Amino acid sequence: MDIGAVDHVEFYVGDAQQSAFYLCTGFGFRVCGQAGPENGQADHRSLLLRQGGTEIVLTSALTPDHPAAAYVAQHGDGVANIAFEVSDAAKAFALAVERGATAVEEPVVHSQDGTEVVTASVLGFGDVAHRFVQRSGDRDQFLPGVMDIFAADPEEGEQLLSIVDHAAICLPAGQLRPTVAFYEKVFGFSQIFEEFIEVGSQAMDSKVVQSPSGKVTFTLIEPVTDREPGQIDTFLARHGGAGVQHLALLCDDIVSTVETLGNRGVAFLQTPGSYYDQLQERFVRSNLLVEDLRRTNVLIDEDHWGQVFQIFTQSQHVRKTFFWEVIDRHGARTFGSGNIKALYEAVAREKTTS
Image 1 (cartoon, rainbow, N blue to C red):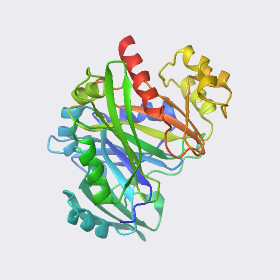
Image 2 (cartoon, one colour):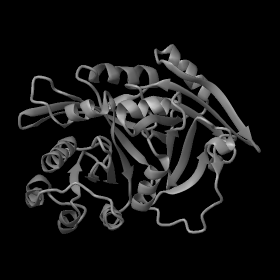
Image 3 (cartoon, rainbow, N blue to C red):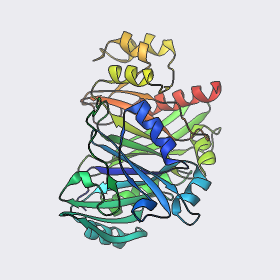
Image 4 (tube, rainbow, N blue to C red):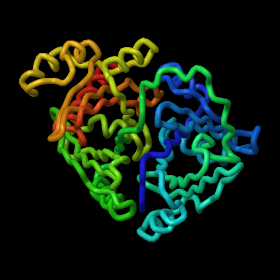
């Protein structure tokens, strides 16, 4: 299927302008384009945000029959489409449907001034879709004839974040294995990691699938039903079904990035001091100074290839569902044996103190 990287991520939100304000002021994204009634899109408004190699589309319904209206009513703000770069969108779409995926949008060609973009969508997990995107010509035009691109900002600003590292997805109990099988069969992904997590009387099961290119990674998580309900159960209840719990954005210097984002108003989860007191028992050494990790609340883990550093934001959503992760990889290709457990415990601590 020749899936490359994540082309873009589309959120359905109640107020695209308000959501853009948070991402721009807090994370340093820039609004680069817009679609709406002004250019023939009467039923919705979309804003294109960019930073580094990450492109985010925020879409709000302007009429009750636009899909964003029903999505927001059921889930609140959240990820509705994770788009894949492909060399042939029509071929990828036909192959996905042949392998069992549900068609959402037939192939459509968008062209203008020598730039052509072909898109088509199929259903992924829950009601989240995957858009195949085939591009030729000016990449900055994004979606010619649909999205009006603004003039380049003379002050580009600091590029703190580069690409989408992975998406974490919560699934109802019993859907983990079928979902892994679905991504293997339909998209050619492979399972690269799995972990069973127990935290007190709660438990969760997770598996990580990745595209052959290594550029699209999904962490799939389901609750264990014979234990007490935990934060995965809470997400599923508040979100109204399967969905993206968080997106991880890659950076080159997590300590500096977290300090900058914190100064801009981004709130991160707090980590107990005892976590850092025990680091010497868990790791022979840390690539980053423990004092810096303690000061910024950054977590550390490692796999066979290297270390990974990460931190999670507090959710800014009314339902306390979706949040962000900032991640910095020092050779690590997966997540280490304690990565998901650290997330589980960090979210659980926020829940008990909120």
